[in-house]
Image 1 (cartoon, rainbow, N blue to C red):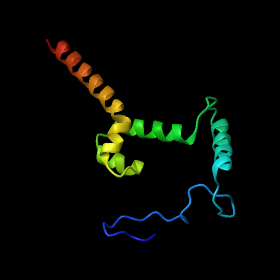
Image 2 (image 1 turned 135 degrees about the horizontal axis):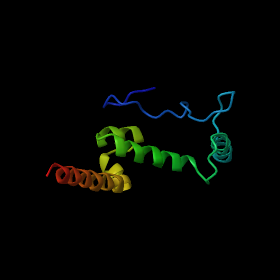
Image 3 (image 1 turned 45 degrees about the horizontal axis):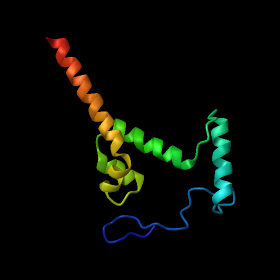
Image 4 (image 1 turned 60 degrees about the vertical axis):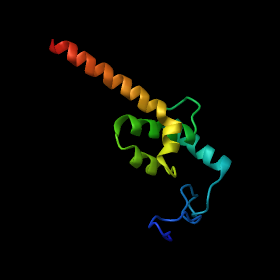
Length: 110
């Protein structure tokens, strides 16, 4: 893959994520059918999509990993502002939970 001046890899349309056995790109309906097959095999009966899994994955990372910059990079966002705009509610929920835990700990020490 080519490198841009910041040293990051440029996106290359030949580096495909979803391909058939011959290495040809899958699009639209074919990806949906493949994902539905995987969901069915995993016993997930709710109407899920690849985007649902992406959102869940990023939300879980934000819940478990304190490095928002790393998560933003893994999500492919160009800056952490995008990540915080889309997933800030997860961080707020974590903060409230942590404060509740802190107060509970303080009360138990009295």
